[in-house]
Length: 409
Ligand SMILES: Cc1cc2nc3c(=O)[nH]c(=O)nc-3n(C[C@H](O)[C@H](O)[C@H](O)COP(=O)(O)OP(=O)(O)OC[C@H]3O[C@@H](n4cnc5c(N)ncnc54)[C@H](O)[C@@H]3O)c2cc1C
Image (tube, rainbow, N blue to C red; front, side, top):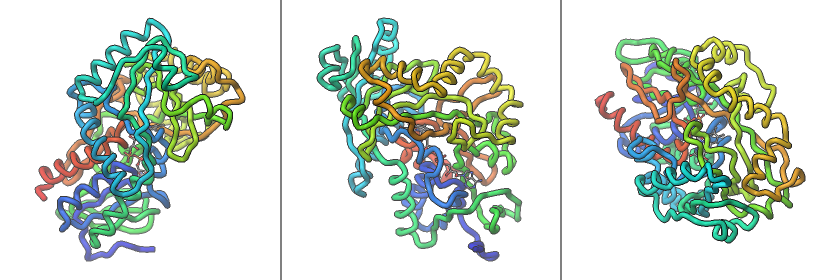
């Protein structure tokens, strides 16, 4: 079907129907109901990639470096997300989580995370000992821990669909179109022609929120992003009926600051299942959710990028370990048993996977904070890692402010 209309000029095209794209469009239209916004998503449904494949955790803001954009926004906007979920009846539960140290060598990192939490204003956090750990999670064993009461669980795909519903429902000139893959851009006076595989749209401004493909869209639009997306797959196991008896809510290991992936953890989901994971392995396909998925272009681009090799060399031991665990249930279980020692092979069964868009610079450094760049009549979201789903309303708002400032809306 051809949705484009040669004479029609849209104010803003948002590319990408994940939680960031929809939050940006939703915030823009809430503040500026006069704007005609079109969201273009390549898949036939919203939230089909990172947003629909994440852990579903409303993060507290404990982990992030005080003063970082992540830290500043996670705490305030977490509260905004929770009240949004309440107002719109989105399944969620503020069930709290524990972070558990299992060896003396982890105590320094644990204390650092606790102090970060205090500086970031995370409410209600408490240091706990082995008995309190057992009271909260009877099957979990640790030498010390942190109780984080404001962490919760939510269905982020449902949040995304709600942003879309409110956008199109409140603002009849705005729309969300699925099955529209953006393939290129062309200048047309002060406007831009946005090509999809089906049609051409004419717009004044563009906002690129394409997650795993944001670097490619940025390049097509004429921006040299100074980074590249490399996909890292995270595999999950599900707890079986028997295993579920051993975990009440959320159990996390102490974070290793060198790897911002938070480690393999237990997460009760809003659908009643409990997942454990994810690990983090280099994937040969940006949207590859199977262990052997392969895409020639994705692999070639990743392996001809210097940053990927520099990352491999810096962290080869960690990478190798993660790879072994990806193919061995026994090794995966062993990691989980650090937190829940009585967990057995029968308690876990292979589950789904997600792929993180890891933004790497040329030196192999993972870009940690959110990154949004302005170019001509476009904004490009080049890094929106976890907790971007928790902080989606904050990122949406930041994009709105940048759009108003740079696009002079
Ligand atoms: C395994 C995993 C666990 C995580 N756990 C958490 C968590 O518990 N809590 C939390 O807050 N965050 C978590 N995150 C992070 C969070 O999921 C992401 O930061 C967030 O979903 C990013 O949203 P996005 O909209 O930028 O990307 P995406 O959700 O990937 O959306 C991008 C969209 O762009 C579309 N697109 C791409 N190219 C084109 C094109 N050419 N034309 C049109 N559309 C296009 C894609 O199809 C996709 O739908 C996790 C992430 C992963 C991968």
